[in-house]
Figure 1 (tube, rainbow, N blue to C red):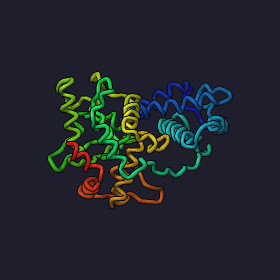
Figure 2 (spheres, rainbow, N blue to C red; figure 1 turned 120 degrees about the vertical axis):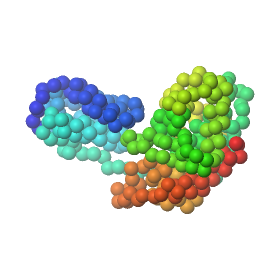
Figure 3 (spheres, helix red, strand yellow; figure 1 turned 90 degrees about the vertical axis):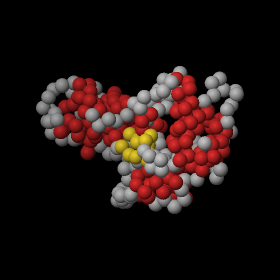
Figure 4 (cartoon, rainbow, N blue to C red; figure 1 turned 135 degrees about the vertical axis):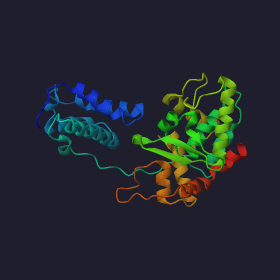
Length: 318
């Protein structure tokens, strides 16, 4: 590997993250890049001063130490971060080649869906959370129902919910949709049923009563002080909803909000949606390496959402 610029590694990391930021990833994605780069770098021996010190041998040893007490998924993500970093350096003419090709990457472990257990669990959850709980200091059922519904009936990830704006939900009656800033900077549009649309309306009405009218560019989900809901707050909200509904034993371990998203996809499949429809609605890059990407029409996606049984209870609640 030929070093063309003898600059500190930290400087190149900053330049790499600045280049990645132009793709509009979430702040959590950028933070993960920096964390992965720094953690492996700390394990490199001897301590490298410049990118010329990051030989394949040094990187292999550092990744071996990094992988010792971490899950394969974490090691794979760190490998991808470093691979992207060196790809950037090669493109910028800083180094002549990418040493990550000489560092083994863990084989991907097939992910198994972790939906909520129990045929009636989503409906029980929504009905329970919709009821005002006087034990809460400041109950806001309209907001809590919407959070659950965005995952159960639109399949949104946690980061995607936090990125939503008031104007993200749009369209004429019968053609309502939510525009999502997806994982890896991939935007997608998810058609929404009248039940979820009604849940959005109920929430915005309750929010207006609390804090006044919100501008289209304002964050959609806010806390009880009117500030944008943060990652920890959203995770706590979902756990609290599970406790209030008494369904803690029906939530797969480690899934939490993701269990709602998996429930969305599982029910789509049960109700007849095909693999390509689910792929588009969930925002996956692919279902499997051997499965090609298949385009589907907007009407096919809308029909798949309309068939989702969980939307029925939202229509009832409205």
